[in-house]
Image (cartoon, rainbow, N blue to C red; front, side, top):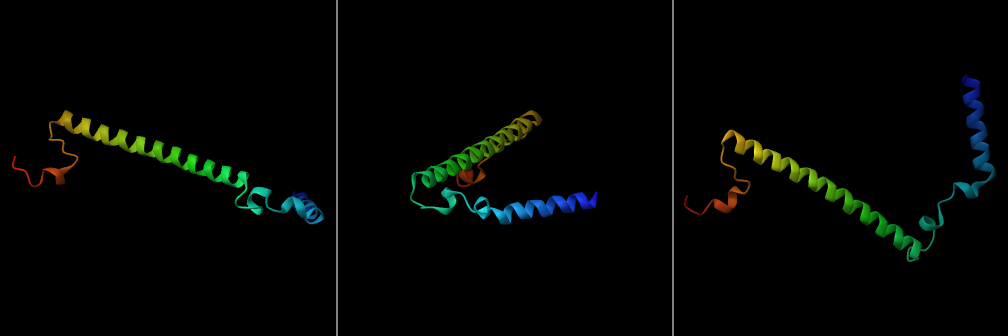
Length: 90
């Protein structure tokens, strides 16, 4: 079993050394940073980060909603922004 794993690793290393162009970076990463492919990839990354942030914000707001509803069910006063009421008399 160990000989087969070693043989596979040697063959893979030989393929990479025989054809070094396959190990290089893609034209988007290695090429011109102002090309349309690079700009499109950057916008794609920003879009995916925005979607991820939006989903995380939705989860956080849902858990805050659940916290508020559970406190209302127990009968506690729900005040998510206590600093806005600090100066006003109750």
